[in-house]
Image (cartoon, rainbow, N blue to C red):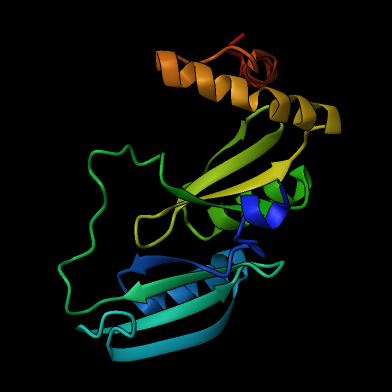
Length: 190
C-alpha cells in the first residue's frame, strides 16, 4: 500500500496558530518588545470570510521564527474575552523554542526586567522552560532543548506504550520515569 493511500494529507508545517486578544495593538507591541517578534501582516474585515457572519475583526500576524507564525484576533463586538475555567491556567499555553540554556536565562532576565513575573527555569528532563503570561492571559513558555538523541529515541519508542496504558488506567505510566528523575534531582525533589 502506498504512503499516499494511507496518508492522503501531507502537511508542510504549521501555517499559523490563532488566538484571541483583548487589544491588537497592545498585543503586537508586547510580543515585539518581550519576544522580538516582527509584526508582518494584518487582515481586517466586517464579515467573516468563511461564514459570512457580520463580526468585525482585526487579525494580526507575528513572525515567531523559522517560518512559524502566531496570529491574534481582536473581536470588539463579542463578549469580553475569557478562558476555559474548567482547565487549569498552566495547561493551555504557547511554547517557543530558544537555542540554548544560556539564551533561556538571558530571556528570563530580559522579561523580568520588563516587570513581568517569570516562573522557572523548570527542568523537564530533555528541555528546560520558563513561563509567564501575555497581556491577554495566555500562558507563554520558552523552552531550551537539552536532551540527547538517545533520550529522544527512547521517548519515541515508549510513547505508544504509554498512551495505551494511560487509555486503560488513567494513571501516569512509568516508562519514562528516568526523565522525571533527572528533573526531580535538579529541583531538589528526589
